[in-house]
Length: 310
Length: 250
Ligand SMILES: Cc1cc2nc3c(=O)[nH]c(=O)nc-3n(C[C@H](O)[C@H](O)[C@H](O)COP(=O)(O)OP(=O)(O)OC[C@H]3O[C@@H](n4cnc5c(N)ncnc54)[C@H](O)[C@@H]3O)c2cc1C
Ligand SMILES: Nc1ncnc2c1ncn2[C@@H]1O[C@H](COP(=O)(O)O)[C@@H](O)[C@H]1O
Image (cartoon, rainbow over all chains, first blue to last red):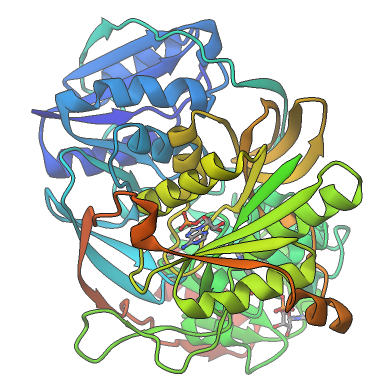
């Protein structure tokens, strides 16, 4: 039997995290199917079928699948689950929204945010804000897993030629109605996928001061992140929050500026390859996880850094 | 409208949890326990809905040990009207918890269930979605805004890249994100009053729900610790290290 992966997309584009989820699936079984649920999602299907090593792409289209509503997607996923040993999705806000609902419909206990596959029924996942790693064995007939994208290297986006099979949509339940969406437009790299992340905290003091950080980020072609304190204070948008309850990132280089290093923040960035901290308090806990620490006032250092990178 | 808020007793968010010496589970002896922060936000939201005249009653529910009565009392001090404890010393999985909550939903005929998005001990982020599935209700996870309408609620959700607004038919399930509200502090008179509010205790076995474990915890371990690195004295030294030692910028 094969492994099923739920594709993450917006009908126009297949999201890169899908490649990480597929990689986790391949680590379980070579025979991987990708399920695309959407509406008019031709480009997504095309990209899906090119992923290296995917055997089959299943496609279910209906107008009411457009906004990826959990009430509509979950029954379809649950109805297919019996044909698979495992059902996987990336632990994004979408995956976290849909997969538990599908698992419950199938009377299965999802294992969330796994970071390692020990064998086909045993998995590792962080708990308690990443202070502890649990090794968990699933006793369920079908194993539902959400995977932490940063823990699995992506499959190649091309080289494959999977067959595409259309499957029927299920009837709409219409329990919820999509009203609107506001997506932040940014020319910077995506936080979850960037090689370099520059994050700011309460130390930045205002949204105006974040301009200093944006200048540095642009010099480094980096994505911008933030601590919860900076988001709560309204300095930046909520989707930039890095941490236990925000995004988990693991770039090549993470620069934390004016961030103290609370465990909830560390949970989202301590897997980064190289960590730099800039903080005026030499005892700030962030220095305990930093490869390079600079004890200094960020308002002196940020302009100097940006200038010297020119 | 009747609102149900499931609240969980968890390790306080300030505690740094460690594995027990035999690595079989985490060591929770003598650590401070609190109400899960996301559940506190859920209680606060329910209280605000009631204060705005849009709800008649708020029930808080916990599935857990006898001591979870503390968290139920603090929830009532924040403004919940009564509490139910489904008592068990076992730590149940989200699917089992969702089944227990559903039993109370059916019994109490509630219109809106507000849960936290995530418990900060297990970091599961599942129970609300599972409950919505079992009940066949609409769901909105990661709420940062909630408005009650006629037979519906309007919820703005935090999603990757921004915000999304949904209209849910009632009954519905909503899970809270950090930005939904800032919970109040309970005033002393309210803490006193909460001691007299009704708290019903039901033994888990009485509920007749299948809570058999679907997973087995094999072991827990501390993650690989990062070593603290070096302090650099200047921006020039930092850039030099990043270019020539770490080779992460060019
Ligand atoms: C349930 C829950 C979930 C949470 N989830 C998250 C999460 O996902 N992500 C997250 O980040 N937090 C999260 N938190 C919050 C977390 O506990 C901390 O409160 C938060 O991370 C602190 O943010 P901060 O470091 O920006 O602010 P602070 O802790 O206030 O630190 C500010 C730092 O800036 C430094 N500073 C100030 N001025 C300057 C200057 N001029 N130059 C240099 N340095 C300066 C200070 O020395 C200080 O170290 C959560 C908390 C709870 C309870
Ligand atoms: N044992 C429990 N008792 C009451 N509510 C719970 C319990 N476990 C989880 N919940 C609810 O479900 C939410 C999400 O928890 P979880 O799915 O474990 O991350 C929590 O914030 C609570 O609202």
